[in-house]
Every structure is written in C-alpha cells, then in structure tokens.
Length: 332
Length: 145
Ligand SMILES: Nc1nc2c(ncn2[C@@H]2O[C@H](COP(=O)(O)OP(=O)(O)OP(=O)(O)O)[C@@H](O)[C@H]2O)c(=O)[nH]1
Ligand SMILES: [Mg+2]
Figure 1 (cartoon, rainbow over the protein chains, first blue to last red):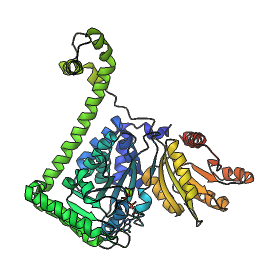
Figure 2 (cartoon, each protein chain N blue to C red):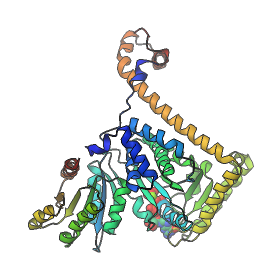
Figure 3 (cartoon, helix red, strand yellow):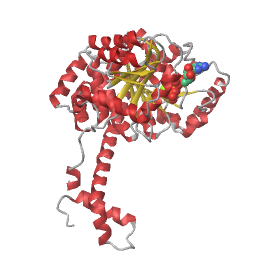
Figure 4 (cartoon, chains in turn cyan, yellow):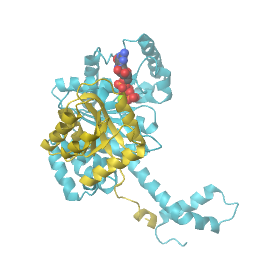
C-alpha cells in the first residue's frame, strides 16, 4: 500500500539516512521520522544510531484541552526561538479516526510558521495511542540527533498517553483558556501535576483572569499539601494572546529560564533519566503485550479444555504467566 | 524465555497509512471544497496534512519533505489548473522529489489529457466516492514505487 522504497529499509540505508540527516538534509530527517512511526526493527535501528547523539536539545511539551490555542502558541514560540538564533522542530500530534485509521492533521496550518528554519512534523495517533508512547520519544530522538533545538511536542491533553509523552519533556507547558478548558477540568485530566509552567491563553477573552485565579487557588492548595515540593516548586502562570503575540516574549523567557534552572540545579539529569525509564517501560509493556497475545493464541483453548468450568480467570492467567516465564520446556 | 517471547513480531508495518499533503494554490476564495476532500481522504484511511489556501509551490515542496508525503493533492475549483498544476509538478521535479500530484476539482474533459501529459498523475472529479479516491491515490503511489 505504501511506497515500497519506504518500507524496505536495510540497515545500511538507515545509516546513510542518518548521516544525511545530521548534516542538515531535511528530506532525510523526514524519512527517518517515517521509519520511526512505522515501528518494528527498522525503528529500533534508528533508535540505536540516534541515541549516542542525543541530549543537546531542550525538549518542550505543550499540552492542554482541544482548541486552547496550542498550535497558534507554538507558532509564536518558534518565531521567538528563531529570533534567538535557534533551529526549532515541532512534533504535532493529532488523533486518528478510530473507524478508518485516517486522520486530518490540521495543526500545521495553525502553527503557520513563516519560519524557514523550523521543521514541523504532523503525527497521527494511528488508532492506538499506545503506539505514540514508542514513536514520540523516537521522533524526538531523531530531531535531537539531527541538531534541532528546541524540540516542541504538542499533544491534546485528553488521553493518558498523550499527557505522559508531554510530561517526559524537560519543560512541560499546560495551556488553559477561558471557555473550553477551565482549571477544574485540567485538574481532572491530571494536567496540573505535570505542569512546569501554566499558560492562560486567549488573554483577550473576558474570563481569562478567572482562569488565572482558579489556577492560583489550586497552586496555593498544592503549596499547602506539600505537593509543590515534590513537583520542584510553584509553577509560574503566564497570560498570552497567541493571535497578537501579547505575553509570548515573557513565556519564551519563562521557558528558557526553567531549562537553565534545571541545568544549574542538576535536576535535568533526573528528568532525563525519568524520560529514559518511561520509554523503556513503554517498550517493555509493548513487548509483554505481544507475548501475551501470542501465548493466548497458542495456549488458551487447550488450557480451557484441560480445566473445568469452575476454573476462574485469575487461575487461567496465573497458569499462563507461569508458562510465560518458566522457559521453553514447559510440558503442555 | 519461552517460545512466545522469541517469535514476537518485529517487522515494520507495511500497511502504514498514505500521507497526503492537501492544498489549494493561488488566490481563489474559500476552502470549503478542500475540507470536504480532506474528510473523504481521511475516510479512505489516509493521513491528510491539511495546508489550506494560498499555498505556494515552494511551501508545498518544503512541507512534502518534512512530512515525507506519499502524494500531493491539489484542489482546484477555479480556472488556473492548466498553469498551476503543471508548475507544481515542475517544482517537485526541480527538487528531485518523486511524489505524484493528484488534482481534484471541476476539470473540463478536454483538459485531462494535457494535464496528464504535463505530469499530473490523476484527476478526480467532484463526485468521486471515498473508495474511488482511496483507490486512485493508492494506484498512483504504487505506480511510483
Ligand atoms: N481570541 C483568541 N483566539 C485564539 C488565541 N489563540 C488561538 N486562538 C484561536 O483558537 C482557535 C484554536 O486554535 P489552535 O491553535 O488550533 O488550538 P489548539 O489547542 O492547537 O487546537 P487542537 O490542536 O485542535 O486541540 C483558532 O481559531 C485560533 O485562532 C488567542 O490568544 N486569542
Ligand atoms: Mg493544535
């Protein structure tokens, strides 16, 4: 279905693509990202080649409710980054249709970057957001290894995986706005705990100050309960208007200061190792899921026949777990 | 490790969705038609990178690189297709990008052959079904592979 030259990647091709990508060829970067999204052994090869080269990029996660203005905001942020002489990359994640697997990826047109140095890649969740847990870190790695900095990841803050992949950024920005996503909703979605910085976007709308006040109250609360110390300090709140750019310079400064603080306080190391652990965990879970499906397909019916009506599901799964970890010579 | 562990699938999926950059070049009016096409393509299982109106050839070439596009869809609901579509094909060739261009819109019968001669891979009329759109796009992409 897909161009065959895109799916058959010999390891040597991938090595060559990497050389071209790291020497600044955008087309090669685009191709590597497709390999990562395709998953499997070729994606693992990209990860192996990329891993030794990473660690230079400041990874920024932007999340928040649908329509909060994330993409418009990202567009303004990359302009600030370019003004500061940087070479930004954006990974914009949109959901796929669960019915057809297709997707309309519309973030790019909102980001509307007249920024020639910025690389923007639109990503679909491809039906299962579990895939995102593997592909997003992989794509960030390609950008980082190719010399892009900062790397900005935009996700809609609704699914757990979407929130998780943004939360493993160096700096996580949660966007709230009047109307759609009030602070209470953000709280429910688990967005408040992951925020290093809050943005109240659409500051031109009436009600923006109310959102700010609600956020302040919640932050006061986590100050009182000690949750703030766990998170590493009180998250600042920045008001922005992403249409006319009001507050954007302040937000950019706040984001870069957060990163500098991470570097100076040595907390960056902890963050990065947490990110690594999260990715390894996702890979483990994916591997285990594959093993579970395989085992079920092979053994479930036989196991049922061998057991009687009264055998509970917990006992069946227990037995399968034993088989799974007992090694290849288990008697059938 | 058990047998199950050793045979876990590691192949890359060959049925990855087609990625299509969808745009309207030139200065004509609204993007209602384009939005309809975007939905048809999504329903046909494609990932549509939606660019909207007033795109230049240079924009589209650059986006096609970044998005690793399989195909470029141009919506044309005004005259101009006879110059704009061949110029898009030319821009891709100049950039050495081997990506098929599909034109959708109200194209007079007599323009179809000249457009194909100019390198447009396929033309879709306004009444094309999701199946037809999906099949056409797959065919032109496979023809390049
Ligand atoms: N008034 C006002 N409108 C804004 C502002 N920022 C964004 N918008 C508008 O809000 C709408 C949604 O903006 P997007 O940037 O697409 O929002 P998003 O959060 O990326 O949306 P999804 O990716 O679909 O979740 C658009 O119509 C924007 O023009 C703002 O600061 N003020
Ligand atoms: Mg968006």
